[in-house]
Length: 154
Image (tube, rainbow, N blue to C red):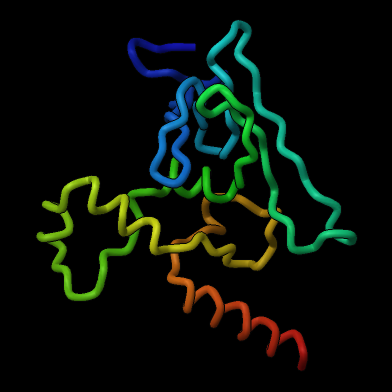
């Protein structure tokens, strides 16, 4: 659906173009709940997510399959949610002032984005709620994981 020029879901919430690792994927939009819609055909179709069996493969993340460059490819839902809904929360690098970061070209910010990982705050890899996700460095992600392992071992 469209409301003026803005695409909206059935609740009237705006739909944002899906972004995955700095690439906008045409024909796909996401609402504020992290649901992805295929707008290429009518009727609009909500994309289904695959939830791997936690007992068999506890390290697997929730995925979906989207068309990119004419081929279907698996996409990690937590990265799509973070890049689409919370891309503006990308931390600025150390030594860069807020003013410098605001004036920084998008291409530079996209390059910086690739140096960050998306962390699940509650460690549940199937919980892709935007409030449960944050950008961290690889070192921070590993430290958080090790802290949780030590905590659980007690």
